[in-house]
Length: 422
Image (tube, rainbow, N blue to C red):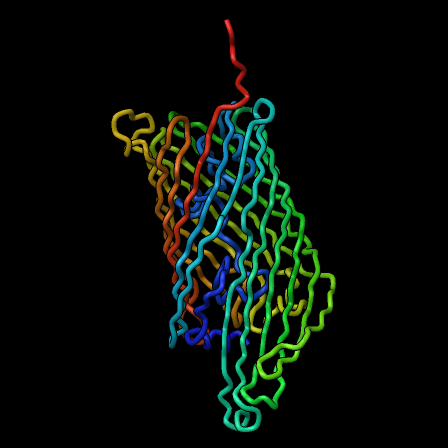
């Protein structure tokens, strides 16, 4: 099935509908995992497990939110855009996207503890494939059959986390996560002959789930420099919710009243993830970080759920390696504005948790970005650019080349400060 869908890419994968994500590799499970983090993280290749920065909210490790000024209130709002070009070795197509990516706020709690709450995308589903039968005998008997397969939807993470720093070096954090979203997958067969009945069916999934993410960071001063070690673990948890299955006959291009059947989701699970990172800060100018994450979806259970499964796809273990750096010429320069700008670059390599025909898909890319200070304190506007490639062209596969940008507004203010009167 997947091979036929991919082969049809060039003719009709271009679509004018509104999608939050668009990729032929989102036909399986809950779709493609969304690139995590804010624009700050994505400008450095997506690193953040060992990231500690009192100017930005780092949502990739809950332990990092204690890296802050004690009286500060912080917020982050982000937007994402992406242009993709698909190539299956014979045809080419494209798609453009623009979405809200995250909204997070963070503030101190008590002494060396802090709190954050926010929402961010978790996975995206978006595809449309149209094929026509080419068998001469079938065409002569029933006419031309046009088959359309579509998918659309997202899952999100709403989270709340807290962290505390012990002995000035060790930070521990925990984060409650509520997963939710809606995914619609449908297929329609329409015949050119009015004497032959077509059929359309769709599966609408309302997905929920509860999870927990723990994190720790240890910071070791080395002269004026700092070495940071970080680790995170995300629990794999059951996927709850329900599925509505709708079917209807198609007569002369018109759908009859659909018949619906609702069932409770049972069996599928969100995968677990373990992450490790190391970062090194040189004075107040340079920062380097390297992250490694391992995701486990072997018990996802998608194969037992209609429309989440695909005969050519299977779930397993995936991993990613990310590296990034930051350079700020002089944060406190009062004469030259561009010296106060923080410049970043990074790269990443992802090995997908899913396999197509037994082969895992590689996703590799590079990023650049910068944060431009605005007004006083640590307020700033962050811009990140990304270029990458997923998969390869030919042999029933699709090469997806994409160019993306992220925009983030970093808001910083001093709250909780008692005024003094004489």
